[in-house]
Amino acid sequence: MSGADFLFQGIIRAFELIFSLNPYIISITGVSIKVSGTATLLATLTAIPLAYALAFLHFRGRQALIALVNTGMGLPPVFVGLFIFIMLVPAGPFGFANKIFTPQAMILAQYILVTPIITGISLAAIKAVPKPIIETVYTLGGSWKEAIIMTFCEARFGIITAILAGLGRALAEVGAILIVGGNIAYTGSVGGIGEGESYTRTLTTAITSETSKGDISTSIALGIILISLNLSINLLANFFQRRS
Amino acid sequence: MELFRVENVCMAFGKKDVLKNINLGIRRGEIFAIIGPSGAGKTTLLRILNLFEKPLCGNLIFNGLDAGKTGGLRRRMSMLFQTPVVFNASVFDNVAYGLKVRGFDKRAIEKKVSEALNTVGLPGMGKEKARMLSGGETQRMAFARAIVYDPEILLLDEPTSNLDPANVAKIEEIIKRIRDERGTTILIATHNIPQVRRIADRVGVLLNGELIEVNSIEGIFTEPEDERSAAFIRGEMIY
Image 1: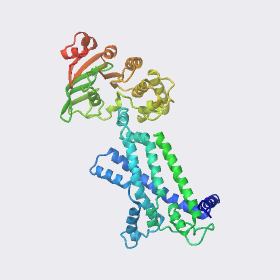
Image 2: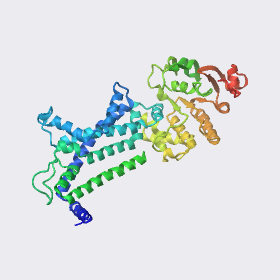
Image 3: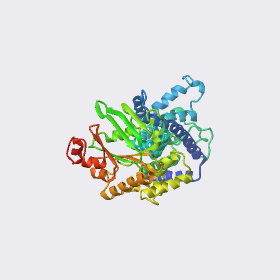
Image 4: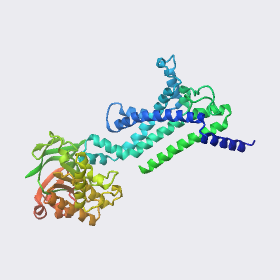
């Protein structure tokens, strides 16, 4: 079989697995969306108030915090994974929580990776709102609360782009969640491929393990789903960027 | 009867004195023009009157109340900037903003917005996207937004400096109509001398942060009290 045939067969088989809603593939996709979605949601809840505080409040250490956020936007995932691993292993300071190799540990890792990204992009969007907009709110009788709401309305597309960028980063991330999640699937086999249903196995970590096992068609199927999710997110982000 | 009294107001940015010992009384229902060259301190004075900036010294008395000690006075005023600011929303939502923050009900908002749009010559344009309006229409929409909640005083910072003559004429007509129909006191900062002659009742000349003369419109053009005012009116460089 030539390389092209091998790839072609793999793609055909991958589409069969996707359209037959293979339980193994579905469970992995579900864990990916659940972990990355939760991490992005929690990161958003932290990042947007933080971005507002950095944009509007002048407090001691503000510049240092902005520098920390900017640094965090390029944080190496394996370093974050290692850090959380050390914190959560039984011998570590938070080992008593018994959370290593759980979806919660993966959410924590992605939360740490994604929060600076959403904060940084949101901060740029908020700071891009012209100062006269805020002054006009005050001129028309608005309070600081109305000024914040108006800033959000004006920066909304930039903030949505920030959230989508964070979600895209979380879904594509592999290093940190592989270390703290362990790429675990239950024993047995569902749908005739792979192992049992996913516990901490995501699209990215499953691609690494299925490829190393030589199951290329499953890897391609997982890759197509991952790319489709990221493409959809990027298309949405582009749409909102153009609107803003 | 005075609506706004400025007593011994001074302001500085860094080491630069921007306003020096300003004393001024604005009468209720008049159109008062503050004229002076660029950098004279006109915008700073307007921002102080709108309570955006706190003066370094002096007092502001609004309708008998000390503006420095009385909260909520800004809600009784309105200010229009040289370049109008447009919220990313419809014309209706832009104009309705001041009413919404004051808690007006929906029916009152619709009625007042409609009246304000009629006053500025934009009837039936509520559904348009505000950022799609032309420069002149945008400035008129900003006027509607500023007057819709019937402020006692309207502060205008060079409201026609970016407009063509046709739109300047429309804005001047709107300014006079707002005063005549609504009784709004209007303070306009400008360096457009012919415009002052067309619309103002009284005028104050600001030069290098100093209010060198306050006079009636007839007085400033026929018998100015200060030679520097006369030179500015004649269009001579005195700064």
